[in-house]
Length: 264
Image (cartoon, rainbow, N blue to C red; front, side, top):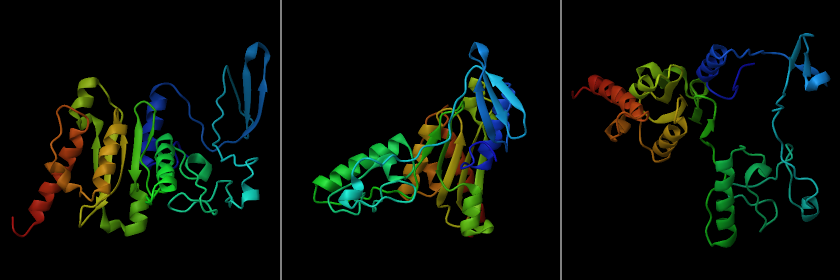
């Protein structure tokens, strides 16, 4: 197991280094067998290895599941999936015509921005004579650690498994090479983009940096609009911002493309 197991391995390793630099001990591959309260409001946690950890507070973060019980949905004929989420189609309509569902209750990705988006789409699809897609294959996300870790699309391993190793290229820049980060004394983090080797189509990105949530949104727009990674070099960014690194990284890919061009 590792930190942020659903995220690019580079982000997991970098976050571990941040925790260790701050004196945080991370214990992997252990199960909690018991939790007890001691005198003086102390808390004791016993692990499967019989190691004991004591502290003042405990945060339980074991995930969430949709709570669809007690709503009378079964009586209406609304289908509930195996994960207790309400089954919906791409338009967010349930198995019963005229009944829509949106957000965490569907068992889809659990993000506030995604739930808000789906709520608006469901309302439009229900009330207006049009249909917009409410279920997305890719949802950008940000984990608000320090620094933030944001993701969009496919990570490197997933892209290589899907398209083949030779068909996938990676552009990587450590924050030590980002002028804004150097000015602010930020030493941990990186920007990583995964793209098609031949077409330069953007497959995904992982960014560990201050303002990564803003940068990942830019890449989500670029990907959704079909803008290739190298063409991002032609979009002017302000300096010294974190996001200008995206333009600089894209320029490296663009110049490499020119070098390989027979007409250059």
